[in-house]
Image (tube, rainbow, N blue to C red; front, side, top):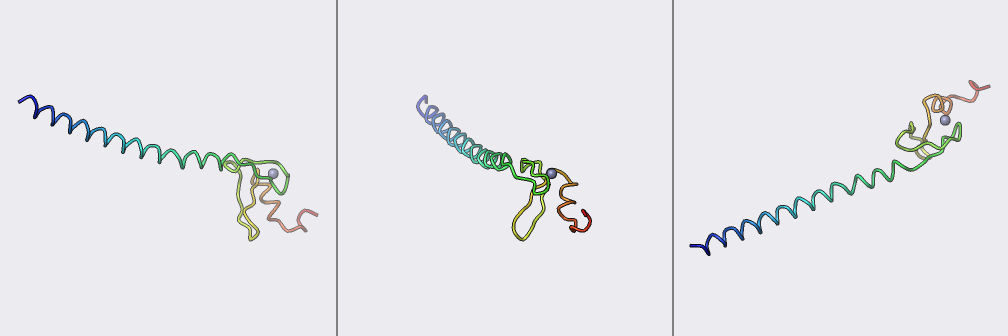
Length: 88
Ligand SMILES: [Zn+2]
């Protein structure tokens, strides 16, 4: 009588352990992209208008054929987009 109960308990513990390990594995996998994203966000980009270094996370972006441009503010982005005649 005692032995079958122990076997059931053992099986349940093994099953719970397996589920817990699976759950922890998923948690780790979910954390990794977060760390990667944070590393990208910490990258500094130079504003082509005022030459200030702006963190990518806060920067305003503009897609150009030569690549993405990063700006510290909307006014810098506007200056960059404006034709040269308007600045003269
Ligand atoms: Zn700027």
